[in-house]
Length: 183
Image 1 (tube, rainbow, N blue to C red):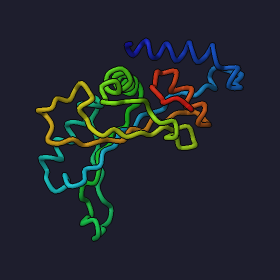
Image 2: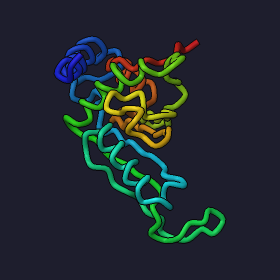
Image 3: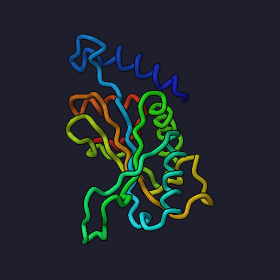
């Protein structure tokens, strides 16, 4: 399934099948994907610039876009954290980059997870957004085992224009997200 197929399936399936069922009078009121945010905490890698650069490179490869390093604003002694110390890396995907990543995530990365039984339905936030975590980066085809220095996870947040979790669930289901059964 390519990106154009994903876009056309959203426009055709959602508009024709569910516009009236969801209570909308106009197809432009239907929920859409706004953005996808990929976030990684760096943890102990903040002490070693080479590992931090590798993490940035990995996220750039996975997302296809340049990532941003987030830095601490104030010191927290219990975490051994000083101001301007790197604490995370994130990238925000919109438009074509978002759909390209979504296509690779659904069709290539998630099926490569060992013992994968589907995504949890309970991970919606109440406002139509969905967040889930991945334990490692090797499931993406851009990553090879000899390129990485350790298995590190990431959090992925899918932001939609849906008003409720049910609308967002329906939207993501139309894109082919493999959710666990509601039972």
